[in-house]
Image (cartoon, rainbow, N blue to C red; front, side, top):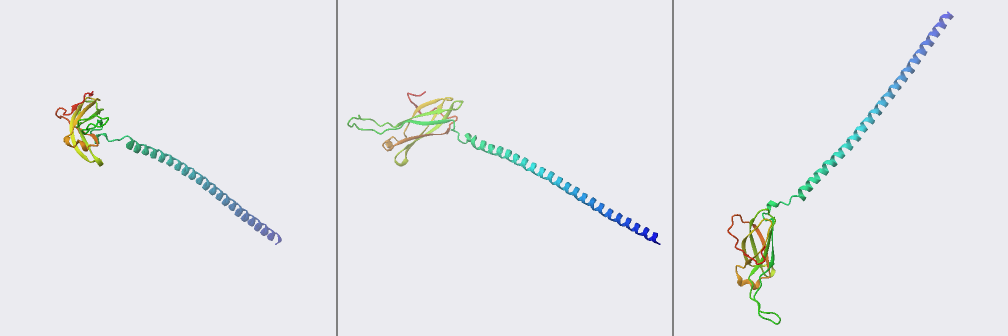
Length: 203
């Protein structure tokens, strides 16, 4: 009877120890699993951070490159597009050498002078071929008011300069003229020979 009880006690002890040991081992295994899971999660997070950081860096560089390229292109468009075709006279310029002068009576220290009703102009062409231009002269008085107007055509050799004279359409208004303003209105292809009077200093 005593042996039976001792055997039963020993069996119960073994069972208890076995159960206790199994539970402890399972808990340890579970803890290990948690550790692996955390380690895996940490590793995954680090990978995600690296990818995210790399992606942002790459995008910024790409944006900077495109932005810089776009800015330069826009700047090139705007800096290097003077629209020369919009102005047919972009390759020519005209200036006033001498304006008209009214008659002047003899005064102390100054001789009498007849009225000069022609203005002397100089035209320069940068074109690589001979061209004929239409030149307009405005004879302006006080407050820039146009008191007379004249126009002519002038043929200029390629990349040449020519000095010529243009007379007033209404010489009687010469006394009102304060300045002569000349400008080229455009080319006159197939125009009749120049009606301007070449100046003695014409080249």
